[in-house]
Length: 424
Image (cartoon, rainbow, N blue to C red; front, side, top):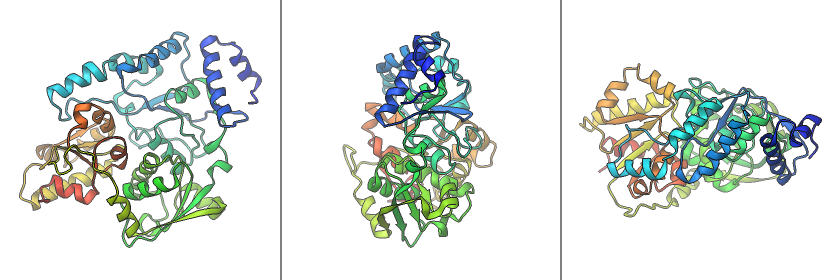
């Protein structure tokens, strides 16, 4: 690792022992991946994946206290992943006891630390920090120090920023130091495609399902996806960005994708075309039968696979305003068609706080609430980490939530049919 004079002075202790430890950690991180130098973090905002005050993570909070005591605050503003608790989300008294006493018992302590680091508003807590209403939108070419796999893959792919799949805490250290080791997705070579994915479906593929198939095939490598123009077009409008948000989250969680290219649509693919593809790239063809094969091979790990659903989560990553509106229309229409006034399964839509606030001014907010749907800022994954909640029969249209928890995946159409009472 070739450090600048200033970086070397930091490593040698010019700003104290704590900063020296931070720089040493970043150097060791870079060495592990063959980085030869550090590069400046240029984004206006940082983003931290750790938003939950788990009792077993006291060493993390002690580390943050050490950083704060040394007055090592980043010059960046911050956003963080969604909060793990929301009293509006259905839970039993016993669930709540486990959440507050045995799981997220350090939540207040941790959020106080986050305030000192610069996370001061409710709207700062979301996994979809790049939505317009939240405002953490990196520019193309910006170097980031983020974690949160779904946010990293979106920033790299849709926005054209540059960020590796960092771990929690390391992302905060990069923001505090102001630089990160240069390797992988921060380099031109690391952003080239190892796979050509040819999509040959007869209808628009489910974003979460297509992303899952690609993630499981390419793992951590970079795919160049062809054949999506007929459904997504050639401009990154709101519909295309919402689709790619969910698609990317599935590639990142069902595999370990940190960057994808969509032919004729995403910034680098639009500018550089097939020059992004490595020689001898592997080819993966996805048609209707392949997506069906992937879907049918998902395991159902409910204690009773035939149990009646007890809860449905929609929005992991958080929903956009348009998605929240579209889902509301679909649910209200489905209930009317099925002669129901309330959803057949308790249902939670999740979205960032400012998106919820804007949605609450719409004509759909009150009818949706009357229909029994909860709109929440919660992180469904953190909810499902409760061992009591794990035993529940939970449905989701999120492949990320399916991968990390016991929730059962359903396509959008299937879950809509179930929650509006159309499925018998």
